[in-house]
Amino acid sequence: MSAPNYPVLELRVALTTSDYERLTTFYCEGLGLEPAAIWNNGQGRALMLDMGNATLELFDEAQAATIDEIEAEQRISGQIRFALQVPDLKAAMERLLAHGATLVHPPVITPWGDSNVRLQDPDGMQITLFQKSEPEK
Image 1: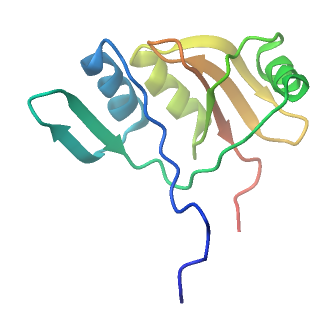
Image 2: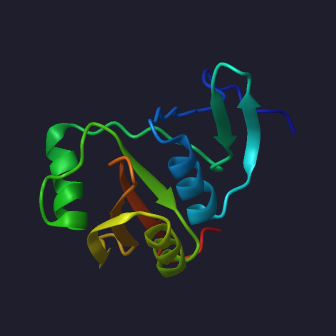
């Protein structure tokens, strides 16, 4: 089987933080992820986390407001918001809350049947955790 002929092969999102230890602990321990790569070159520190399949969603203001209204009952997210599919919404939410997340809005069932919860990471990044209503085939 050959690799698909996509014009983009990988999406990476780079977050810059003033509290590296806090944010790496939040994402590694909070989501249960192991670093895929670590760079400590004497000039700074970085790590890469493999987050599985990546997509880029582009919303106009009206769609962003619609999603915010469903998940948080008000327009609240900034220009960037993470949406992370997890196998167990309750467990993932509890782990992230234990590692410094702020609950923006309790879990909701979306009009399309998924369970979504809106959180904020320790640096203020909006995060939607979602669990599909049915396992993907």
